[in-house]
Length: 133
Image (tube, rainbow, N blue to C red; front, top):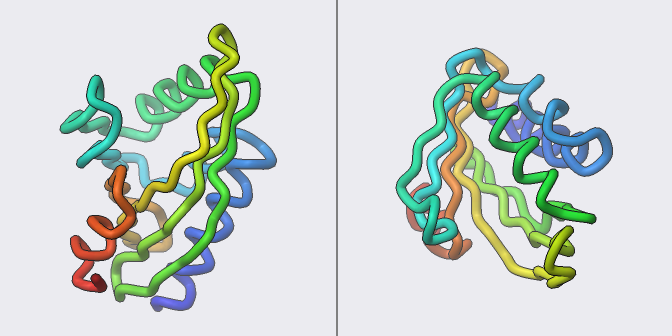
């Protein structure tokens, strides 16, 4: 099952960059959970539950940027979980500030859907959380 899990995560990030946030949430379970484990200070520790709520949050994120991408750099198979290391690139809509940073996501897959997404500001922390680092 882990090859399918890796492919699901790859396709979700590819679709995110081409089609926007709905392409990611289309691959998520109805009761998906997104947790900012060590994200931006204002959202650290925040948990979002449910596909529609997550889609609303992601659309708000996209609205704040002129350009925004999560470029998939590495994918690690961890059984039921997949660790994705990404490069976040964007330009703020109102500020014009460029962002270029790395993140790690620990993604739990269940029944062929993204069930839980944990965002880590430090990719090494994501690898450690999945017992890969």
